Image (tube, rainbow, N blue to C red; front, side, top):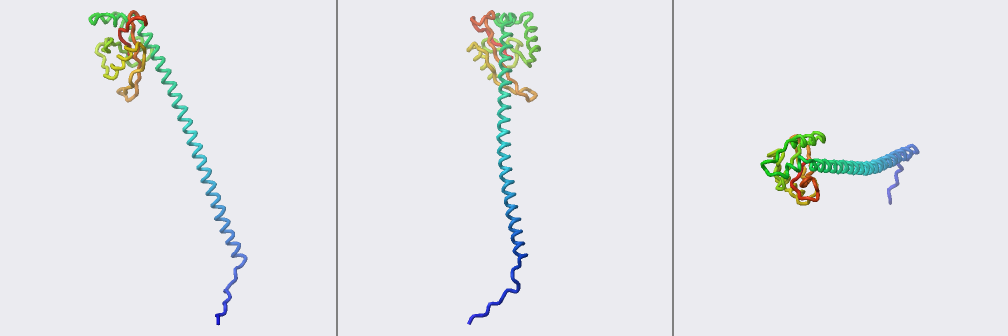
Length: 190
């Protein structure tokens, strides 16, 4: 024979059912809020990343434009300097007679007017003519020789100055008698 089934001490009440529904509802709503928050945060993070990428790209394009304009202006300044009579006369003379009256003034005016840190004139071997003995690194000499051989202005290697700032420059060929159809007699470094 089987044992009689004992009735429970207490039957579930409607209040117990309501509590379970409330707890289940609370857990469900909380899960929905957490999921929605996660989706919103993820979408906003992606939007911020896209926006930051677009901003960085715009900044890079603007900086590139500024650098290109600065190089163009420096190239034009170099051409103006190379066209000065004192410059091509000094580079066209023999080594003993290079420093002409007015050369220092012409170079100084160019340096001051355009706020260049240095302006150097070199012969066809990229040896400094003015200022005499100006220090030039090997990479700079090689680049200036390339400018002379190409008969065309071009940027020279960047360098870091003593204050930790990047400096860039342009080498410009100097033509005999200032005439671009004649031979190259040196270069100007701005």
